Length: 350
Image 1: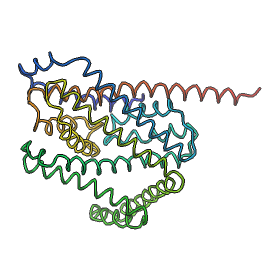
Image 2 (image 1 turned 90 degrees about the vertical axis):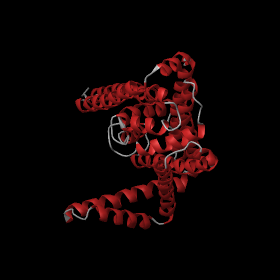
Image 3 (image 1 turned 180 degrees about the horizontal axis):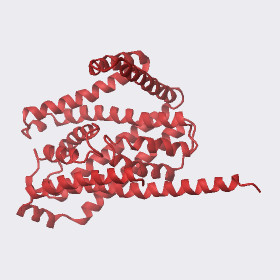
Image 4 (image 1 turned 90 degrees about the horizontal axis):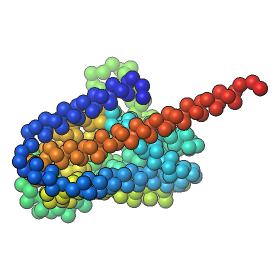
């Protein structure tokens, strides 16, 4: 781990820890102590097990998508690259640092760089599809039950806007399948509003980048539509399973703290939180995650357990990720060092 990584990990952990301490300070009372006494270690172990299982499902998604393009990537290699990606995702805004790790590790497993990039891009697309469909289904199933929670009108508005935004993204994805020019024109229009006061040279560079990224996206999509349809289908199934497992962790913890599981409410809440954390505000969403979780869940669970709930949730889905990500990263570094040493020995004259 280089100096830059160390700096960002301490910044990320520091921000998250400060917010957690503040949250615990303002919500801790006698009811909190009672909830902690009733909290079974089995519940924490179960939540952690579900999270690990979700990560294995993620690895299976990568494996089947790579297989559909003609590559045999070992399951252990996929699991290790998923774990390693968690570390950089935890210290970069919108978790963007994880993508290069996954691309690199797929490349090291003899997947062509273009195909590795295609797999990683399609993972994000599948996430967006599941978010859109998941939001629609859960909002429909909740019906009047969500209204019974007595959410403020502003919160209801944010929920529906969030779902609508993801759905629009999925629709744009569907349109771009047939005609990438539609997406290019839209991106150029949006960029035009943002860059009104920019210098012309800077605007041109941005437009070139927009066109290049749209072309990369369409190339990736073409790869799967051409020869990896079955892998894309299985990838969608594994994506749904992955997010389902990740989202029920909150309900497991709530049951352990003596609250109702609030299953559907929790899924809608975490869809919103997941989208918020994609916005590049802080490394690993530190601070943003704590505020989002406490604000949304505070609408339908007891104030006394909010601090403990957020602490447990972040321990499993953030601090644990950093730990296993660091271990997997060290395994990769050791492999790279040994590979470099072997190459140097082969290059030595006899």
